[in-house]
Amino acid sequence: MKKLLGITLGIMTALGGFVDLGQIVFTLQAGALFQYRLLWTIVLGTVAIIVYMEMCGRFAVVTKKPVFAVVRDSLGMRLGVMALIASNLLNVITCAAELGGIAIVLHLLTGWAEKPLLLATAAAFLFIVGGLRFQWIERVFGLAGLAMIVAAVSAVMLHPDWRAVARGALPVASVGDSRETLRYWYFAVGIFSAMLMEYEVHFYSSGVIEERWKLEDLSENFAVASLGSVCGALLTVALLILGALLFLPRGIFPEHLSTATVAIAAPLGRRGMLFGLLGAMACMSGAAVETMLSGAYNLCQFFDWPWGKNSPIKSVPTFTKSWIGMLAIALLLVLSGLRPSQLVNLSVIFGMVVMPFTYYPVLRVAMDEGIMGKHVNQTMDTALGAAILVLIVGAAVAAIPLMLATDFGRP
Image 1 (cartoon, rainbow, N blue to C red):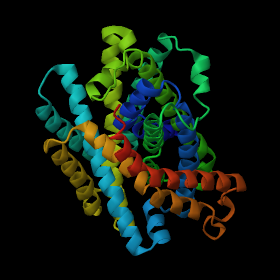
Image 2 (cartoon, one colour):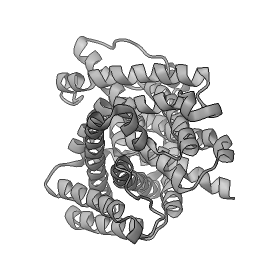
Image 3 (cartoon, rainbow, N blue to C red):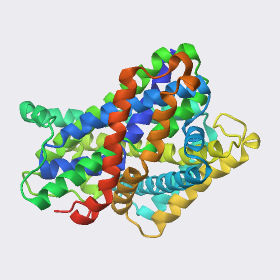
């Protein structure tokens, strides 16, 4: 039972990272514009996050160090501080987007004004995260996020052409004219980025230490990382299918979150739509919790300050103040008038730009035999990790030019 419940760490990490607001919006839009032709980015992103989550879990168990301690040691203090600032800025922006998205979903469910719902959401997170131990946070939000399975049910009910879906697993270099091709690559980078958001591995490696995994638990590390990631990937494929079948034939570009979330369970009628909205809200809640905690983990781990959600508040005062501060700043961002759709675009593209500063140190440590001993990367692990890192760097270089050239992918 303990091992079974431990899998919720992987489920929460993956659903909070894969099926957060950014992935919902980007994937539905990609389906609405390019049908299934970007499915290959989901396959690639799934392989990439499994490879790096497994490495993060492995070196966290072996070294008892989380990701950001490794970032500091690998990059040095000056570059490490820059990576810390960039990562926590990304966490705040992403958390703000998720809070705004939750308020919109609650507005759709209740009809109440968004601003009071936003304040109530922040207060609820303060109470829930402050009151629950790490294990219960991962179990509550991990299992609640599984409500998004309604998206998969909806996609199957629409009877897609599965052969056409399968063909989308093969990448193509161009689609239509040059502007359309640039937009295609913008969404390819966006989906890839949303599946590899840095806070996923920050949260996962910290969770491994919070749960006191031992060397004998390494056998289940790959299973935990894989199961959650594959689950998140299947739901992302379902979102792509929904975008292709609901929006593409009608020429609709689902730019607003309300349009996107309602589509998740449209084929299932009123009750299904209610379940779909609750599932989307659960995934966004998981992402909000991951980002606020990841910000606190990053700061304390970088400077070797005491941290831990399971530690008494008096023994980790900076950690506690940090995650509360992340929540407060994110709330102020949304209250300032920035819309979740604006914040999503910023977080996904900015996340891609700073991604190499997280994933390079992970690979460097995991392949270092002096640090990892007999648990060092196998040749295949290193080869896959290096190939993925090259793609990450290439996407990071292309992200901002593609964003500017396509006006955030708008048709």
